[in-house]
Image (tube, rainbow, N blue to C red):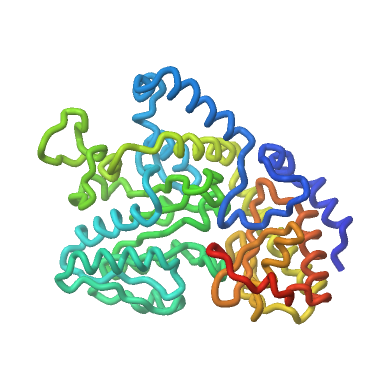
Length: 410
């Protein structure tokens, strides 16, 4: 039997507890959607204000040099690199996850010119699949995307596969893929491994270098707390840099962009994956989030995450017996920092929770996702969320007509 006192003790003993005050979260709100949009770091508004009023407002275009705007994509990449097990010069912050996927899939196919297949799974995030579909259609010449079930990826690595594209944490179920195993199997089959870290970077220890991963992308606005639409990042293992010719050959990826040559010569390093002018305001917001994460031991984050997801599962079973199907893996070591529950009226249940100041989110067709961000989620938040969820299910409040109306964003 888990009690409120148990959760209070856990908060009192939490080495990360002091970090919550580094975020701006309404006092009456229980926010369990950090896996979709991270909370606002308290330092971000001041950082943005300085960029807007002083650097842009006063120094104007001089800030590209005097404040180092021009180098922000690489500087932030190097700051982010230790969080994903990468080295200096292997990570770049730029564009969106979708655009970065296109760039790296394009590179992977160039690095394996005799192979024509991108392999992924049916549970992958749709934008990853859409970008692969668009690229193969653009290239023609027999290129294709092949989809299999998650547990069939290793066995599906046939000789025509150029690259395997996998999201490390499944966005629906929260299942955590074994990066080292799948990367090894891909290499044994002569293929490359491209990982989407959007639901793992900043909350799960990632070791791209240790796993010998080839390529990776990730999102800046979830557990990295970079703000809505924050720039994404990409990783290219050092051994692959300087190879291939970027199809998205924008001027900032040129070897000497300010020579304004008419012919494109790609930069010899990670910079070749830049395209257009970097979005300085958005990069500044992401920098504030990365500063917070960089000061914390990822092992502590992971330990708290596993404890909190376990706690929530136990509370749901204790307070709402037989109401939900557990979609996420039972074993905490096999899931990311989310718990997904199945319910036929999942969308309506989410709307009722939101009305009671608990914010999870919904994923079609029937999944309620609860995301736990250890930097600011308290154990007592989880306890209170469990109580409010129980009250909604006991009363049948979720059946009210207003909770059945679908919003554009779920």
